[in-house]
Image (cartoon, rainbow, N blue to C red; front, top):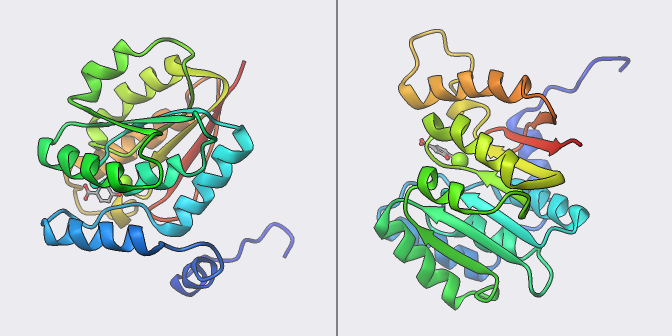
Length: 217
Ligand code: DHB
Ligand code: MG
């Protein structure tokens, strides 16, 4: 193999996905209800969720902040990796999505660990104290990512984790035709993320590409 890498195909993804924990009955019901409510099916991949849960467990994370709740699938799965007394705060700007997620969180096994904060992350993140988070997950409007990253680095403790969804820009990363706004924003953000001082990060090819970074210092 030397320095060659196995090219990741959809067969590899199906293979690895079949060898980690998938959605339980509750998460399957949540997705069915979200589909019925007309939400876009853009939740994180289950194998990506497993990977993120493992990182949170390794980090011993107790305080997590998520930007972009959608239906609450990632909030609930990530909160399941927190110890009793842990807390995940998830920020959602869309009122219908926030209400849906809050209802499902309330019925979940992690109702005591998840808070849905309604509003614009650009306004809410600055109200959270410096060094108050063990991990931050960004999965919202891509044009907002540079701003959210700045806030995430302020919020995180040293050795805190920052995870960012959609590094592969919904499959549009290598498209030569002009990109729509959100995909173009991802490409620009990837350069920012790669060159942010004090952040050791790598894109993990799970789901639509997951940035994982550790805050140094
Ligand atoms: C889109 C957004 C996401 O966060 C995602 O994971 C997939 C798609 C989108 O806006 O199309
Ligand atoms: Mg996403």
